[in-house]
Image (tube, rainbow, N blue to C red):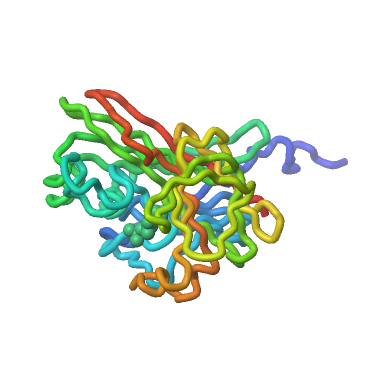
Length: 320
Ligand SMILES: O=P(O)(O)OC[C@H]1O[C@H](O)[C@H](O)[C@@H](O)[C@@H]1O
């Protein structure tokens, strides 16, 4: 007779906890980065410098979705050319004079500041799909002396990067922690990796008005359902009614970019000459493998009174 009492039983044995997402911090100083990996292999990597997402792999970790220049500085000496730089509190060149951001460099200070890693949280949804959220913070006290002098206002930014199986969500929370009100712009400068720019289009902007920075900042209406890229493109699409912009490659949707409380989107590809003129853009023909679709609040200014908070972000879905 089998001695049931002594037989290990799969039912009675304490079940081993299912492995959760792994989070690892590597490197030191401004080159420190946080890497999160899901049990199914997807991963995200965030450099503390700029809280710049420098890698996002989906498809079990097999597909890199972001383009990062081979010459991008990843040591905290310069904003990263690629990934998802965070643009705050001004987009592009600041107003020449008369605005609180006027003394700041192009795209502000968030992408050149060292953020703090605030921690992770994990969750599981009803379909047993695991996700991991990484939080990063930047406060007045964390600014360089130069940045603080140029923008002497009290603020707090919390940036949350959430990795799920087929998506990445990046959301910012801006708080006015001072006595005075302030105005800002915000943008997520995402460099999407694609195989061939000549087969790539951006959909979801039909009927939207845009400023064409290549054509002397003139205003146009988007008349075609698809934006094809056949030369340098630098357009600011304003007040977009639809939530989703889709990057299509070879006729198939490749990425959905879903905006949350952000009304504008910049479409940028530097093409041959501009790519060659940027010292940190490599290889020279890398423009064929990237397209920036940058969600933001850049048309005019967001104003926060003392104690007020703004939240906005994107969810990007890899559709491979
Ligand atoms: O070279 P950066 O400061 O990183 O800016 C890169 C690009 O950012 C945005 O897409 C702007 O619309 C472009 O005008 C600018 O060239």
